[in-house]
Length: 342
Image (tube, rainbow, N blue to C red; front, side, top):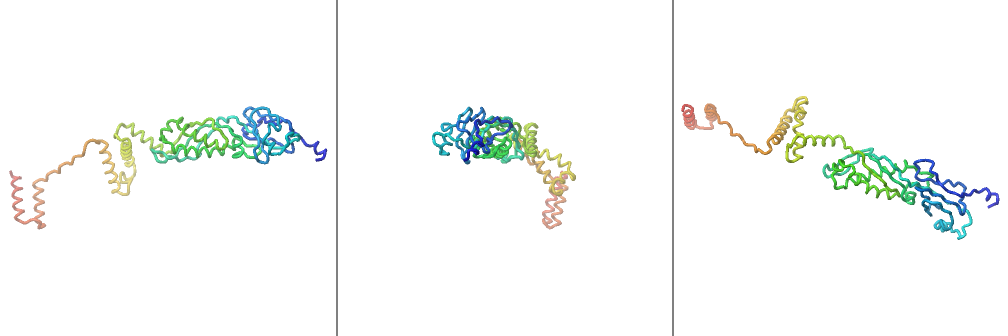
């Protein structure tokens, strides 16, 4: 190297990051043609960490403090560079700063309903919203798995990836829970605890620490919410059955009668022709009968006895068809007339 080129070369005495732009989680120190002066100073503020990367390989990691750069403070990098122990010459290496501050008040939500398995309803589609906070906990993992060698990596960019992790983890966590979904939906703190542990594990794979996670609201699909409202209303009607589900079914049948009457054609209008309407009416009548008198067993009423005149007419009809003889007809007729005349 000529003397002129050496004089033109610029050396860095102090490396530091003032975090002028909010929301940046990883920032590469702009080296360009500069080299780090032997004995230079690395300043790492509280809520920061610095990483030296040599040819894509992480060499040394520094926490908060002021570090004088030498063979003693850069042992891994010194070994990679094969420097002698004097370490007299300037050196060049990529330096990345990471913000380890807690990123608070971050919103999460299900843009599309997520489907979870539930022991009460089998499958449930649910929407949920809330807040969470996180921080860069392991710069090595964060660099390797997410930020890489980019000049800067922002909070918005990382949250695009976290959103997918969050949704997948929530579906898995709630789906494998033994607690019924309705119990968790009624107790949002319980739901948050159920998800938070699994979510913290998922985030840690990328060098991110989950600080807080809460559920602010839970909403169900309209059809499921309507069914739950009906079930609640059935219970409020007052003990239609000892079995809650049976009571709910009977309430639905009873509620269907006025709705059917409003349809064109009455009861038959909700089926296919008059036969469907009559059949549905019989089913509803049986259900209502069981509801109004669940403990009383139906007693078959004895058929009314035909009058003597009617019996005589039937007897004559049998004779005319040849089903009985004239003798049988005369004897039976005499007995009936005797009863009629006293």
